[in-house]
Length: 628
Ligand code: XCC
Ligand code: SF4
Image (tube, rainbow, N blue to C red):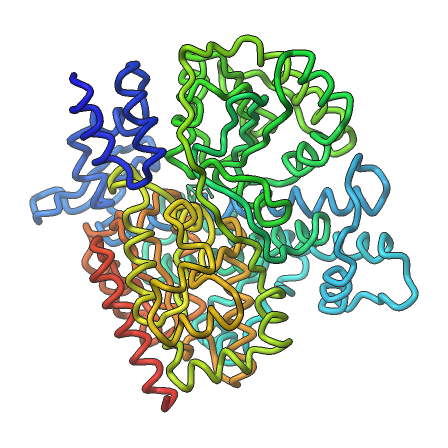
């Protein structure tokens, strides 16, 4: 392949200049990436894409003929609606479990911190601790924050179980929204219970009514958004601080030519935040110099990266499809991973260079990686050993194979719900006034991943630009926020790309038109934002002129996020079709039938400009209903 050809392929694969540069390098060096594997998988199974195959039991696998042929039922007799709905619930409950199990670990560390058993942790945000304690009916006056934290951690751990059957955090939702949940029978009862019940229902011969299955999918997703994910966000804030506006840099140019590069990848801030705190250690800095480096350069990736960016301003090298590219720069001494969204092939990629991959969770080991188990009791010691290992690997870097792109992009992050509210003067009145006046038409949350089905970041960037042009404020989490960060949309200067009304508000407040609200569990911040605005207006979330979008999603977690958005009343447009097109009944219910229940629904629209049209139309419909 000529150099020109590999550049052309890189330009088809990704939007970002630094990504394109390194994709070209992978092609030239013959280093395999997800794009190559995606090409090798073509054509992908049509039955699978439609959601009509079932491999749930040993009488199968079964597949239904989508064209109405003889095989209209599986061996057990399940029809296409049952199979499609059950597969969707399966995906969703895996995603909800991932978010919630992450949440549980954070709550457990909060408990251990309160008990003085965790090394290097402290109660950082006492204000937030107090707010939550009050919600849980825990006394705070005159008490040591540690005692309060202990009661709170136990209170939140009870949300996972089955004794209470009432999810405290879900009471943050406005009353009209909770009424809808009650009426539909989807009020979440506990975090683990809904997930376990989902798995029970998926078993052969349990739930065969697609409507009933989808209603439980809604309930399970709500126990994630208003439960597991929210617990993760809130307890991470208590431990590490609630984010406030912070500036940093992004893209692959954040890697350093002369420092030890450590990439922190995955989702949970528990270890990575301790690594950030520990990297300041003088002894480690000295060791780095001894090994010929000018220091230690920590960069984030995916949602662990978002957590560190939001709270500590750690540069973020990239999103989901950047994990292999970071390694392919040849400049990464160590990639530290916790869990979720980590390609199982990362050690294979690393073996093409000197990079060491270090797994840290007993739940997420990968053959070929070094395993250094993280435990809160000795988190600082583990962090030190990990950083040492990276430093000692620095002399193995081969300068002839290193290529680091130039010019990182500036970005602003740190927009927690509390920060947005404070910036507006303590309540949402100013924002509501701007929405009523039409200066800002509404608000859309763009979330989710990258997916090699679509040019990396194209969906996120195009949709965000379209929306802000139409005076619709954009809030983002996850890889979506990283995409727009790389594209320069997360700086106050990007207000010049917004419509006149939105631009004037951004200039007044000195904020970007696209606000980075955090990691994927921080989609719960978007829920709280919507809930608090709705409460001030005295309406349900489904009445607000807002929307959601996941233009490039890939993950089961995104299925859960999209569903709790819609179940909470937020109309949500997906850029990648979910695997439900084999059942017109399931499709119709999710794209239409739900409107009668939650006043919101799913839409599928791969073209981001048309997705913006759909979102704008929905916002206008809701504005009209509110008489504004
Ligand atoms: Fe993973 Fe959260 Fe998706 Fe990115 S956006 S690919 S889930 S890292 Ni959550
Ligand atoms: Fe086939 Fe039914 Fe078993 Fe699924 S549950 S594999 S449809 S027999």
